Image (cartoon, rainbow, N blue to C red; front, side, top):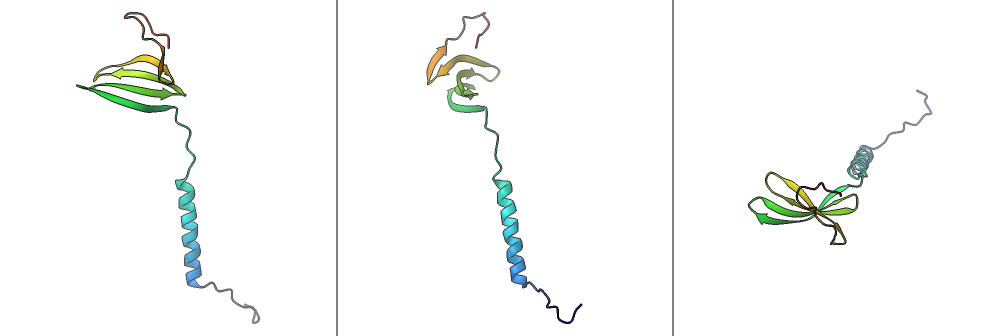
Length: 97
């Protein structure tokens, strides 16, 4: 070591403060990750008792009225601004939604 060289000492509190700020920055960067937009959302549900329900489900900006029981799920209609766009099909015919 040279005789004229001054040691570059960092005070311990400054080191601790710097490390704490670095840890907070990394935590906040990890906590605020950008999520993919969700394609599926339950807008509203209504219980009909005995494990039966009605629900408005949004999928890719389209809304559907869905009815369900403990053992089945049925699309009842497609909605647009809360109004029925596609009526439910007659029994036995395939759906065209």
